[in-house]
Image 1 (spheres, one colour):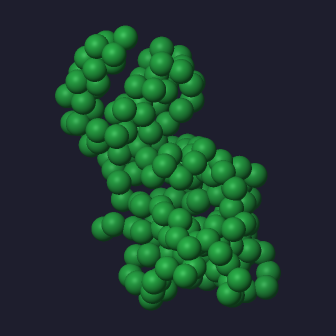
Image 2 (cartoon, one colour; image 1 turned 90 degrees about the vertical axis):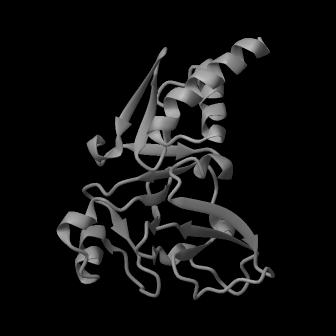
Image 3 (spheres, rainbow, N blue to C red; image 1 turned 180 degrees about the horizontal axis):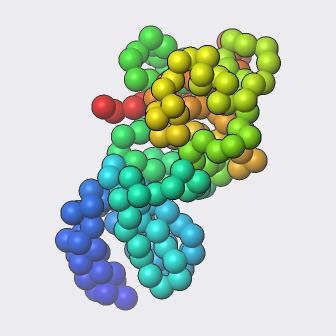
Length: 193
């Protein structure tokens, strides 16, 4: 019933705006609520909204443990992860400047959805752009002089098999996903401060 959906949207908008969820996210939240997709996550810049059977839980991001995973089945859903990140697919003939601050580029030709955003976990390995060898992610971050307290707070864009594609905000890209001359499509990740 459209009237019921409209009423629900109004109520959720009133309630969720306090947790920094936007109108488009609320529309998607209603859709997933009706589909009863247990384990589905949405994120604002300050909170996670989690589906668990018929309930919704809203948790401040600072209280979420580092093993939490967000699954995106398509580009639009990837953009629901947080207002801080914007993901878009560009064609290589677009006017792209690879020197722009807070914009990172990944070869979209070798990506396939669903994709996962998660935090670092034990055993993670990574081949840093421009290097020939896969190393423990913890060693890569030590080499880059990333402070211990920061290491676990950077989101990782990964494949569903947990291969790390990009390390959030540090512009650390996996060599396998670098943009090449023959790349036809590019995933541009913009980080808003």
